[in-house]
Structure formats: structure tokens, C-alpha cells
Amino acid sequence: MERWFIKNKGIDYREIARKLNISSIISKILVNRGIYTEDSIDIFLNSSIEKMHPPSQMKDLVKAGDLLKNKIDNGKSIRIVGDYDVDGIMSVYLLYRAFKDLGAKVDYIIPNRVSEGYGLNVEIVKEAEKDNIDTIITCDNGIAAIEAIDHAKKVGIDVIVTDHHNLSFVEEDGEKRCIVPAAVSIVNPKQPDCPYPFKGLCGAGVVYKLVEYLFEIYNLPKEKSYKLLEYVAIATICDVVDLVDENRIIVKHGLKQINATKNLGFKTLVDVLGIKNEIGTYHIGFIIGPTLNASGRLDTAYLALELLLTEDKNKAIGLAKELKALNEDRKAITEKGIKLVVEKIENTGIKNDKVLIIYEPKIHESVAGIVAGRVKEIYNKPTIVLTEGLDSIKGSGRSIEEYDMFKELVRCKDILDKFGGHPMAAGLSLKADNIELLRTRLNKNTDLTENDLIKKIYIDMPLPIEYINYKLINQINGLEPFGKGNPRPLFGDRGLKIKQAFKLGANKRTIKLILQSKKGISIEGLLFNGADKFEETIITKYGRKELENMYEGYSNNIILDILYYPSINEYMNRRSIQVIIQNYRV
Image (cartoon, rainbow, N blue to C red; front, top):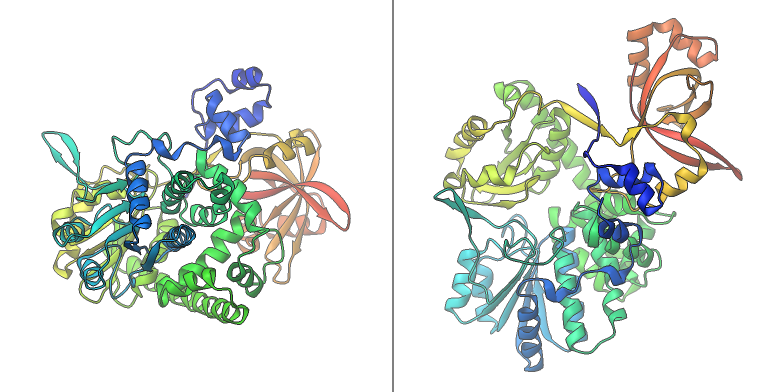
């Protein structure tokens, strides 16, 4: 079940359009994304690198940069501690490459997801002590490493934290007090007293700002740091942060660099994956990113990092093929996990819970988050998938917009061993005896309503198909790159007739519809990978004969409401306007 809503921010988008001399449709789209001040619209529509915020505005960043310069200049040993996902891998790559360029004595480690878990821990600090490491710098982790950083301080190792995750907190007398580690410097824009104007950077984005400052104090040209934006863009897309403000600038310019990359490993991976078209957010988010991620899930994230660092063609080919094979294995393991979890939900009382907590020991812990995400999509409920870890029960959660998962886990921290994350995603570990207690408390504490659990589709505005033209489509395309925080614009039209329909593709799973508006204007509409469900819906409402008439091009009584985005079909040197149908109802 789903309901359609028109986004309404209560802001006069027509007045904004008039004042800034832009299309009212484009103005409405921008307002819907929370972009309505002159400055934010200017940054969005004119996303030049020069509009990025000065790194010095971020709390503790100057302190961290100056300290690192002192360490580098005095030949101190620096160890980077990263994370095993794409954001973590790119963060390590950025820091390592920058430090090497600056002549630093540096190495790196990435904890193993299964045997070591997430982020900096006491054992990593003890290892650094044995290796006479002077300074540890974390990236994409560290903000929750209280115990590990306390130990580092005790043994005389300086720790610099760069992170973007939410800070843990306690409530005292009705007020929140953030808990931060005793690091010599904490660079994280989500700190409440950090004046940095944009809080939405991923881990690699935070690292990039530090590198930008380091290059500046070493009197290196800005172009040197700009050349690293392709790696920040990959991390930004894969970490699914909002593509607005600085993130939009990073991705827009990073994609240009990606398509002209000189990185041997990355180019080899693209070739091995068979990507022939211009690389966009889709390729990074759904093909390249998952392949890089597979190394940290099923083997070691060092494989992906080695691929980016290698200058040996044969080694690059071998690593790229290994990563591709690991991702194929990951896909199979994921599908099996989804099936197990859905069966458990359907066959138990869990299905009636508003917050789904599923313990399934047969799931590989590395795919628990992916499984949770897919299950969340099926039921539209916050979902936490738990499985058997080496020394405790481990799990990952994915949430819906109406439920702040991190905040709710904070309220249950007394029964958790470790946890961290964001409102929409979290990781945790706990003792087996506390699984049912966690399920009970999260469901008892929640104020989610039945209405919250109905899937909601928000459209930018109603737009009859006769309003679509090439100029509008080009203006919409100018809002790319699309992603979280800046989704592809979605419009709606009602009461469309179907003049004829055709099945396309090798598996006949795509349907092309010739749609006619109430004013008699016709346009092609494409519905991808949904032929069976579409036919079933038509038969249920109108009967099989009407379905047959639709395919034969005969007169029929089928009326369709659609949610769509417009596009240009270019085939055999011919261009035509079409709509891509995202949702429909009869």
C-alpha cells in the first residue's frame, strides 16, 4: 500500500522564480529540496569549486593541520586508521596519498569487519605502541572510540579524529550532553559547537577539507587538492549523503574527473565491470561502489585500496577481477539472507511489530546492513538484522524518515555493547540475552503510528504531459547529479488513456505505452521491469479483454494515473520526448 503526496514547503516558489528569473517549475523543485535562499540557489545552480567553504571554519581543523605539519616536518610516525566501506577506503587513500606527497612517514590499517569490527579499538592502539607510532589519525571513524583513545593518551600516542558520524550523548536534567573522546583534535562538523556551515559531508569529505588546509599551509597550489575530488565524489555517492551544498559541488566536479581519470586501478575496474557509457551517479552507487565494498565485506578492504594505489597493470587486472568475483558472491549471499529474514518475519509475530528486530544466525554479518535495507523497503518499517558475530551478536539497521534509529538506540544503550550511526542507519553489537529485550523496548518506546508505516511517495508537482518540452527537460537535467537530498524530479498526471502498449526487451519485462492526455496530446511512456505486475493490475481492474485490446491498439477503457520524470529518447539519430513511469494506479 502506498499514498501519493505533493511536496509543499509553504514557500512562494513563483516569487522566487520571478525574482531570480528562473523557471517556476525549477524554482518549485529547488524549494522542495530546501533550497530557497538566494545564496543556496546560487551555490546549487552555479556549483563552482570556488564556492566551497574555507576548511579553517571547521572546529579543530586548523589545530589538527598545524599539528600534523609539525609531525611530518619532524619525521614522526603517523598511522591512519580507516574503515572497511567505500567512504573509509577513499578516506584512507586521500590521507595516505596526501601525506606521501608531503614527505610524511606514514602507514595505514583498516580493521577487518568480522574479526576486529568497526573503527579504532584498544588492540589497534596497543599494536601502534609496539610499532613506535607517534600519532594515529582516524578517518570515517573515531568519534565513539572513547576507551581506545583513553588508552592511547595513557601510552603517549596522540590521536587526531576525523569523522562525520553523529556524536553519542547522555540526557541530564532534560538536556543533551555530547560524549567525545579525549583526542588531541576532533574534526567533525557534527559537533554542536562546530561553526562549519555545512554538516552533511561524508568521512572522505571531512578528510578532504583537512588535506585542503594541509596543502595550503605547505604553499601548494589549490589545483593539487582539486585533483583529489574524484575520490571524494565516489565516497560521497556511496555513503548516500545529501547531494546539496558542498556535496553537490564535490560530485559534480568529481564526476568530470572520474570520466577522465588517470588512476590505473580505477580505470581497470571500470573495464572489468564492462562499463562503456559515461560514468554517472548510478554507475558509482550501484555498480562500482558495491564492487569496492565487497572487499571489506567478504575479504579485506586492503584489496580495494591496493587497486587504487597500484601502478602495475597486471596486478590491477588481477585485483579488479577478484573484486568483481567477490561482489558476485556478495549478491548471492545477500539474496539468500533476504529470503531467510522474510520467511522469519512472515512465520512469526514479528510482522506485527512497528520496529522489526530479526535475529538470523545464518546471515553473514557483512551483508546484514544490505539485508536490513531491502527488508525495510519491503515492509516500510525500521529494520535491524542481527546475526552471529565472532564474540557477540552483531547487526545493522536501516530506517524510514519518520524514525531516528540512532536516537532510539541511544535510549537502549544500557543493553548494547557497542553502537553507532545516523538517524537512517546504525550498527550495533549486544549479548544474545538482550535480543528480545531490545525488540521489546524499541517497540514499546516508539511513537510510530500506522500512518507513519504507510509508504509515501512525494511528487514535486502535478504536471500534465502536454507541458513537457525539450527546454524543460534540459533545465531539469541541469539539476544533476541526482541522488539523496536531490532526487530526480518526480511529476504526476491523471486520467491518461492508453492508445496502445508494446512489450520490450529480451525478457519482455519492459512496457512501452502510448499515452494520451485529456487534451489529446500523445507521448510515449516507459515502465521498466514491471510487465507482470502491470498486466495483473489491468486485468484485476478492467478484465483480460481490455488488456488484449490495449496490446492490439484497439479502443479500450483503461485510464491511468502516473508518476513520472521526463526524458529524451535518442535512437537511430532520432530524438523524441518520453516519460519514464515510476509509479502508476488505475
